[in-house]
Length: 527
Image (tube, rainbow, N blue to C red):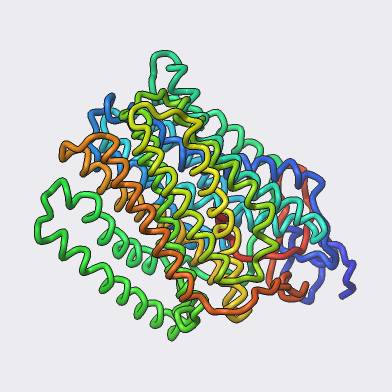
């Protein structure tokens, strides 16, 4: 059969069953002319996720007042989203590979839109927490598809530009979330208070669904593994066994079963490891490849990711303290945090050139973060209730530099130190662990900070204690960096043959019948 045969000819051939354009792989890659518009639509969904992951921080005092939420309920409203995202991210990517990335993206976006509306309608803290968890699970379906769609739909020459836009979306979301929250809270639209921070997702989500249906093309892997939902449930149970006592233990006065739950966490995770080994023996694809734990690069990456990104819960301490302890408005609070983003941007300009330093760069970045947070802590202590925003600038800028030194290099260091065949699972695992670290940090640091407040300590003293925990985590992260393997980190290259194996791209939006062959690499959310 000639390579350039038409689908109609193939269907008429007696050599086998009929084929359709949706199941053929073109002899030469062809890319949709709508790809940049489709990218804009999918990046809009990524932006929604990043905004929702951060917007709630500036709304916590308003939530506490309006919903009469306890401190532990406030912590769950933040950590629940991140934990659900972390638990479902790998499985979400697998579902897209197997059943179609556009399909799973649209399912996730639709669910995200609905749960955002429900979060805005919450009549109590329990409903808010439940909808936040569902929001995180919905994001776990849609976000992993975006990077895979970029790598499938764009030729190799255009991928750096598309990936740059993908990375910029995360930076914009991290900055825009608190700012948007501050603007909406200060505006108090229609007297709705904090609710518009969730309602705003509804029109954006509907626009995204329409755009994805019209512009995005379906793609999937012919050899895609299953989602391993049993493994997902087991590892989620292990994480909840750790986080639930951390958040609730103080309020419950640490009954015996909270301690038992925390002790069960490593047992459950060990059982998860054994279960995954059984999955491999049965010839199926595990959620997390147990062979990864034989490599020092992967183990070190997990350890650093949990500890380092646990420290990012400093934002919870500062945003609550600036509003309730000093009296800043939500918008004033959000604007006060911008210097950190400036520091990240400035540090990102030189950090990639220093990647050859390997684990020493991660250790140095962690120490820079510790120094920056110490400066912030001393500033809070010195100026007390008379603190002005500009006085926070030095510490936050220094901290931003440290974040850029670590966040932009940790995944690359891990990938450079594990065998090529494990690079995809290792990247996914480290990115998932980053989200787990964020959730654990909220549980730990939030518990310490709110515990100080509820024990009668002054707002300044409570903020100081919370920030000391942050500093301690970053010092510990610097020490943990030396668990990573030593040596230079060299760029990782992929051959075209490896990148294009087993990929099918189907006809997409109405009127678009193009078929293309392109790369499919691991779908992960970048920090």
